[in-house]
Length: 333
Image (cartoon, rainbow, N blue to C red; front, side):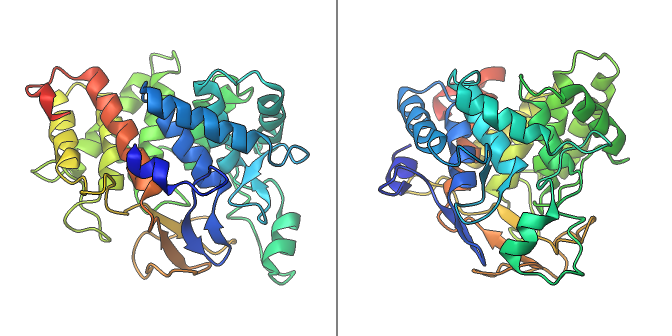
């Protein structure tokens, strides 16, 4: 908490992921704030209220939020701000109501939610040539849809859940356009289906948990091509996924793996690998051929060098693990 508090700028917001569009401010702030709002800790609650006050004053006319102030607003940034608002009791505020209306404009005919509703603002911002398609960035995406489906006041929630049921892969996971790690979309989708109230979804959740359990290394972490020794970011989302199953030993071992990798400064190793696909790519490849490039654009990866994204993700995962387990060593938390 001390690390994240100190990482805010003079405006009281977080910034991370350096790409061709600069640093992300609104999206990162919304995500980190939403994570902290779930902890039940007094300091975390104060921080989440403070960053909501900073966010709610931004983009009133647009309704939604974006990667940063110069970038067009998008559904992904907006839904994380709404998750923050809901967690601190501001889900029915006027500002949240405008954001919900903005989010609904991103629901596609197939029930999924697109990051961007239209190509026009993006084309003007990115200056791509008129013939370049934005089908990938403006198409329905499981990772965005799953996070939206967890919003209690999202009017298109049932359509989003139906989309998730159709897009689950045979191995039990869900793909993501923006993340190299399938753990993100899979954990979010499984959480949404676990809360759907439909008995048939239980089998889909079990399949997702089984996929996740098979991904674990013997010591509990999740290796990735970017972090062969184990990724704190992917492992944190794995904890979220495993808490939906009955294998509490796997939850505990992964949680302890994470605890053992906290740095002396209080953060975890930057490991949130955001993929920036070409805007026309509807099925972006995984790690193969992609490299982390600071200040990069389409066809590169961006890492949360300041560790804000990873650290908030781990804290939220450990809080979830603590709430479900009968730990053999609770003092470790």
